[in-house]
Length: 96
Image (tube, rainbow, N blue to C red):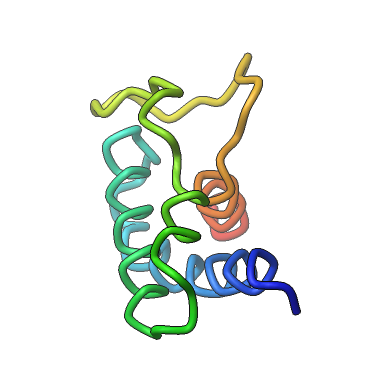
């Protein structure tokens, strides 16, 4: 499997368990989605299987301007959905 796809697969696989730890929050806020993203990337990085620069590329870019507050995360109208945020949102919606 090519490195990008392997890293993507690792992120998607790690996300549901981390999301489950945060379900008691009730609402997926911008602050929480950033926190979960940090935890997912940290867990995947700890495996040592993927270059850190590749994992950084799969994170939400600060240039996209996603908020970091306690309002509900909403991607309506977004032209770009970072891989990590998409995986988090999918896992959150599956459990909900």
